[in-house]
Image (cartoon, rainbow, N blue to C red; front, side, top):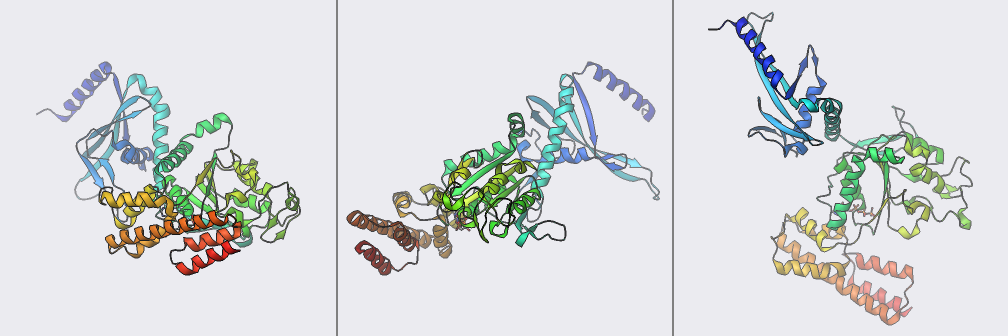
Length: 478
Ligand SMILES: Nc1ncnc2c1ncn2[C@@H]1O[C@H](COP(=O)(O)OP(=O)(O)OP(=O)(O)O)[C@@H](O)[C@H]1O
């Protein structure tokens, strides 16, 4: 029975009275600001859907959505529901407000219109802090989520540094590698260490600024072929949501070309040089064959750094560590090698390669991960006896995750058979490794080349038993 004008006046005054005594203040962030979309509304929306804030949700009702081809579920606040969020010990309340109103349009009848917005409730004493830092934090987090949801690319440098139509020396392809840290088979402690290191790196921009260091990090992945070095790079990129630049050094003719390539990479990316020991000769800078600025390249022997048609070790070091490495930021360099002993110390010193990660043969942890990946076996699905058997033989078998994967893929339709065959294969390798050890014990003098050849033969899951044993005998006779 109250006329609307009176109702409006009463609520207005009551509100004022309430605000006078309240210790809170409120901010409305509407979806549409006049005729423009309010970017802050979208950012808040994304921020509140991020999984990091899901744990603090207090409301009983949420809207859950998952889009086609997506593996992640997002939640949004239901209409007129609220949630608490804490930032630097300050707790705020977000309410998703949806109002219906009648608007006059040119249509023959007024159309109902939904007006959406968020209301932020903050303690008056925290108002300054929230306006200064919290809203920036929300925008940054939302940008991060947008970036992670975007398609990512794997770039490779074009032959001879040729530019594409966009004037870039990198050729992009969509990056779809499914490897993640969850599927990566390796020692669990080591894996956690790497994940924490990466997380620490992306979250510590201020630390790098404060200490005057370029915001970049170097990882050297080394180990035998098939132990997951490439899979690790893909997992890193998927974990951080970074693009990958796969630098093919043999296609680069000079240090200046290398520099140009670096300048054309974007921030938040992983720059990879695979098999660094094979790409160019990076042995000791001081030995006679490789005087400073004098390096063998894929194209011949270069004689000095500025000569134009060589890349040198110092060129590469400048690439990762010099002034040029700081154009752009938040970059990760990853070098991989199967032969760490072939690398120059200059490349290994800390600051360049901050973390040396040994990707080794399968451990018990790795086998369990691979059994889960390929056969869906969770902890407890396999009998204790089988697990004990794996634990007993896995280290001595010296089998790579790639070989285990191969064995499991082959028999994945018959899980029990897959497990059986994997155990047989491991035992076969243990036996061979032990025989090999005995022979070496008797004879005591394999040269390195013979040893490598013999190891390759032993590592092959399809190797001919007699042929291998023959070769071992010949070696020992020799
Ligand atoms: N640690 C691992 N975890 C899960 N899968 C692995 C792992 N290592 C190898 N694989 C499997 O073996 C295949 C080859 O591995 P990957 O290319 O990552 O090895 P690599 O060490 O980079 O080998 P290379 O030195 O020859 O380049 C992968 O496609 C993957 O399926």
